[in-house]
Image (cartoon, rainbow, N blue to C red; front, side, top):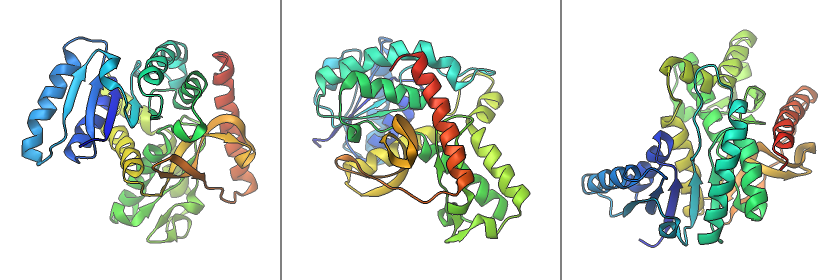
Length: 308
């Protein structure tokens, strides 16, 4: 197997991503962390699971970026996780320094890779990776919309008692409280949920989607979500490695699309071997556009705070 995915950060999200990529035999995996012994131990454990899973993927744990050299994709999960009562924005300054340092090392050893930032606050950290790396916008793709849409799909399926496979949802905007779930474009077997659910129920689903991460943080009491974020990352990685041309909502650097310029905001994109191969522009109502603009403004405030 000659494809290589490096995961920076061996915490719950990083480990979940690495395990799933290895299980699916999508690529060889390198797990990097600054905590000596932890990435090595987790990697060995995953490697020993591969015979059971029928996967010949190789999994390596390391503290040295040299081992990540010539990666096809680098997933960045390093950083501090949210604690109860802490917003994604509270993490801004602390994670800025971490992500800046990580990006410098990634670019040094894998100058042709595609970077998938996962660290919160997501949109602002994408901006850091983009500016520090100097990569074209096609090769810096934030994981946010896939996760938020998955949460919305879960709530729709629960409410209507249908298979999640019948559900589709689109969530745009920043990965935070101002995200913009779009009920008109959210469907069950092609039928908009606005025709299947009353307005109050739709609004409740929208509100729960926006607070999806905070709900899990509160329940856990310590730590944050990692199973769903990990699965969301792997869907993106698979679309890129298999050149699937799959349309997924991701954080992308916009240059005029949706009336937003020079900023990472969640929008539908086509993912393939080149990373973002197309930004899909859909028609928004006045209220939807206003909500997206408000969400972009919230991201802009964070970006200005860290001067990127």
